[in-house]
Each structure stands twice: as C-alpha cells, then as structure tokens.
Image 1: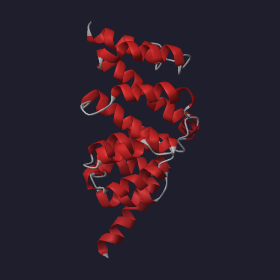
Image 2: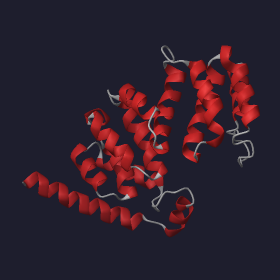
Image 3: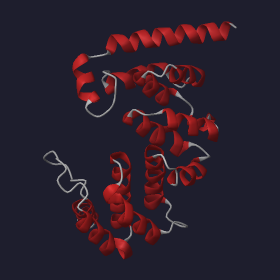
Image 4: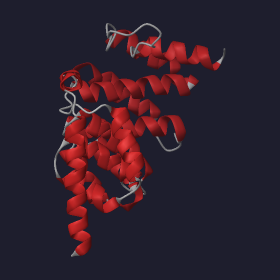
Amino acid sequence: MAETTLTETAVGEVLAELAALDDPKIRVVNQRHGDDHGVNLGKLRAVAKRLKTQQELAIRLWATDDTAARLLALLICRPRAFGRDELDAMLREARAPKVHDWLVNYVVKKNPHVEELRAAWFADPDPAVASAGWALTTDRVAKKPDGLDLSGLLDTIEAEMKTAPDRLQWAMNHCLAQIGIEHPEHRARALDIGERLEVLKDYPTSPGCTSPFAPTWITEMVRRQHA
C-alpha cells in the first residue's frame, strides 16, 4: 500500500511539473501536427533524465491519457517489460503522432515481441496501426532484410501508397526510400515508383534538409554513401 501511495504522489507531482512547463506557443505549434501538448521536448527529456527508469510510474503516467505524461512515460519505462498484448493496446490508444512515433521507436523496437507485432500490425485495417507495422518493416529493410519479400513490398507500395491516409502514406514512402537506398537491385524500380506516384513531391523542405520525395531522398542518400 505504501508503494502505491508513493507512486500516486509521484504521478501527481509529475503532472504538476508538466503542467508548469506547458507553453501555449509550443502547444499551438504542436497542435498543427496533431500533438495536444505544449511541453518543450528538451525540458521533457530533462525531467526523464532526473526520474531515471521507473516502470511502475511509467504505467501510471500512461494511464492518465495526457500526451505529455505519455511521452514522459515512454522515456522512463523499461521497454522489455511490456507484454505483446500490452503494447498492442498502447499503440491503439496512442493517437497523438509523437506518442505513436516514440512508442514504436523507443519501446516496441527494443521489445522481444517486436517481430510478432510488426507482422500483426502490418496487415491491420486501422491505418494508424498499419503505419506502425510499416515503420517496423522499414527498420528491418535497413537492418535485417533476410526473409522480407522486398519485391512484394514494392508491389503493395505501388498499388496502395498514392491513396493511403497521411500517416500510412508517410510510412510506406519511408519504406520505399529505404528499399531504394539499401538495396541496389531494387533501386531502379523504387525510383520509378516514386517518380510515377509523385507522393510528397511538393512537400515543403527546409534549406539544408533532404526532401521526403522518394526519388530525391534515395538519390541524395546514395550520393552520400559514395561521397
């Protein structure tokens, strides 16, 4: 009981600290991207560094359904401690794009159930869930491609990326680019698909940054590999 009380006290204190860090200007910017919080991520990471790893506190913070608290939870949790069903439920609850992204990259990728979840999410009818499957597939394209049907992935991208919802389209496009960058035998086809579909061709790109338009992205990254 004492531990529960301490955790509940800690949750209240952390939520109060996050509320004090909330900046209305940052919130306005974040809301344009679908993220309903106003905490500077550098300050959020500083809080996480101070708290260190606390799995029980992370679970309680996640349960608050507060976006900033959930981001903090993902920074202080133990990624390997979650079960497959827990992560599946968390992903389906993670509607804020930043929470979704951090959950996949900081937690699921380090979890022993990652491959099982990748395969299940990849075919999910919910485009937000499917985008996580594609993100994990892209990671395998780059690091552990053995066993993946790269031609089959290109077939799906060619048939479905143009009309896919935004988050899923972005994930498919990243996979397309990664195949073109990492696998020379598929590069010509990846470039051709990107050129014909024109997905993200006009995406606004800051000076010095590489466009997410797949042909530009592939060409630039291959150039750097051989520079």
